[in-house]
Length: 218
Image (cartoon, rainbow, N blue to C red):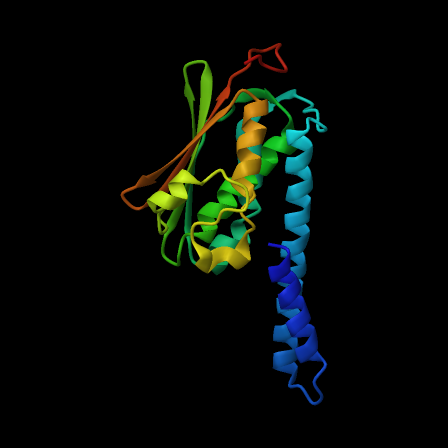
């Protein structure tokens, strides 16, 4: 995983060193380096976070907050992506839904799930974000009309560094869902991933809190 972006950086640096290189090609090689550096940075960051979670070096700092507000804010970060790639985005959320969780860690969860949905959805497709109350829990679903998963991918979906669709390998590092699962376990949450008639649906369940609770016990 680390060798791939390093190889991209090395090869494009060598290309940039050629004399009389057209400006268009120079920009292309520089952009390739930029993407590879960003991927390498994200990989190292996720490796460190996952390692700290597994060693319990990160202690979640739960607080009571509005999950619906967080979901909206996180989704808006992908607006440029869905507009540029001509993907429809639909959201169905309640006005408010309160949970007791670490806001920073939970933001990683929603960012990973939405990023995957947009990554595997082609132009003209749709990504859906839905939230509802389900008894004493809150359910959040991220659904896409992408390529779906084969059985091999389903079996290893939460394994570190596993990537089912290698055609998108330059856009991820195979650590996202492993990190998501670990974060949700810390918050007494649950995640399920399944194929639908057109794409993949990821469902997350989290405990609700009352007006005074800031955390929940599993």
